[in-house]
Amino acid sequence: VPVTLEVQDDRGTTSRIEREVAVDATRTIGGRDVTIPPASVRAPKVSYEVEVLTTDTEGAGTDARVFLALYEKQEREGVVYGSGVMELTSPLNPFERGEKDRFFLDHIVLLHDNSGSRPGWYALGLKIKDMSTGKEWFFLPDRWLALDEADRKTYGEFKPLTSTYSAGVVVEGDRNSYNLTELSKTVFIVPLGVAEFYFTCGDGTKAMAVYRENGTLLGWHNASGKKRVVPYIPENEWGVKFKTADLTRPERFKVKVFSGNSQTEQWIWIFPAHWSTYPQAALRASLLFGLKNEVNRAEESNIFYSAKRIREYLAGLRADVVNASLPSLQYGVNSLSIFGPSPDSLIQDTLSTLVEQYLENQEGVILRILGLLTSEAVSEAIGLLTTLYDAYRWATEFPAILGTSVSEVYKVVLLNHLGESDRTFRQIDLLLRKAKEFVAETIRCLEANDAQGCNEALRKLKTLVVGNNPTSNTLNDHQIDYGNFGIEDLDPGLPDYPLAILIAEEMVATQNWRDKGHPVYVGDELLSILPYDKVTCTNAALDIFESLFREIAEFAGILVNLCLLEPL
Image (cartoon, rainbow, N blue to C red; front, side):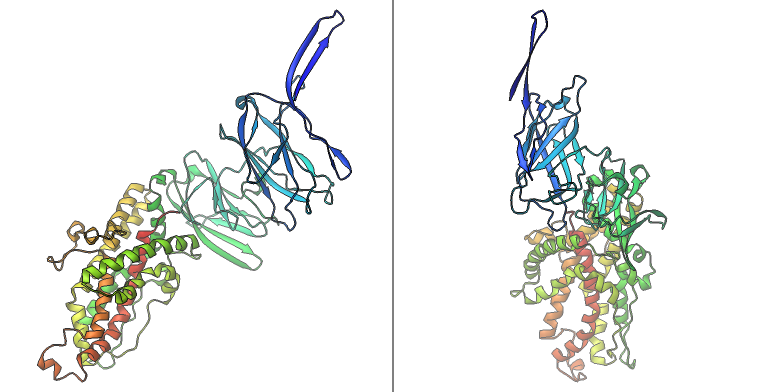
């Protein structure tokens, strides 16, 4: 309302001042008359955004009408400027206040009128943001506004926090991070301008320890007994601090959370700001890092050489070996748990959509490559390429030791052929070995903080594994050039396809051989010594081959999924 103040001295001189004053209506609440203090109003007006957080305590919400007023610090003349009383509605609408470059928020008054059937309200936090400048103020009421609680008042005056939570990773909280670039639940990039960040345990009933990758304890975030909702927490609750200047390369932190006699742990990846240009590379590299030990293993126990060793094993089989059994292929089981101790559900959820789209496209592509009319065999084959969802299980079960006898001559005939002469299987072997080089290069660049080099290594890996246009329905878009990677082309007369398609081709071919018999069983001399018909002999041999090849396909499936992975 407009207010005019007129003063006259003893000589009859008159002075007049006109001001706009925000005046609240008087409300009767709980038998008391309550009025929010008036304030002078500046002009022009600027928009604000208000965010109010109610605790999740039982009965903490209110259905009463809620009001808010903002106040500047009192000037020397005693004048107090403010916004006037604004009713907060849902969805929250911006409200307006005085001149943006002269308004310095000193305190607020928060009030509800005790109306409704459940008026009591536990106000936990409140944020006010100047929409024109981006400046934010955070308040931590953290108290009841209710006639039947504490001081029996439905209003309170609150000052902004003197220090506000800048940025951090939130473990077991309502959010995964604050003011960090979030690539997944466990992978983050620190933006430019963030000088420090925190590791915060959102569940205040638990304690949390944070370790650097070398095992050094960075610090503890002790239990407080209360839930922590970032950023509405006081400074002594922020958690374990880390200075961004000390982040000289992407680093993997181990976080352990303790509750009573139990504990959980997970890896948290933090990347420096210059990785913001390559978020996809950061996310993919953080997972491929789980294969670091694997790429450094000797050939005889390296998963990337599995096809080579299986081929050599099959080619070396002899019919006079009694009760020969399939080899136990030891592949560094622990290193294959690429998710670490706690699989990232957000990554799996993201992949479920990406892989589904990819496989839908691949089904038609592979049908055209093989000249097939039915997709049943193709669907079964490329279904193996979804195995990242089961990577944790697979890493603990692989490999299986199979005791099936392979000594019968009719089995050895086909198994020798598959090990020595199957072009697709041999090409898969060469592509897997080259994939190892690109994974190793990715990890080297990650550790060297070379974002661009890491991105280039991953680009080459993606081309090798799923091609340059994995979502395309056009057959030619899936062709690659083995020569660009220094890989021998075992059949120059045929188009070159990426690993995923070769895996699917071999699986589909296996199904077709089961139905029709393998062409290796041809010729009167061979047929005269076979105890069964061609189809039966083929299936007996493929029972052995397929068990081994499925393990290769599942590992290739992990590479396929990682190459399709996108940041959230």
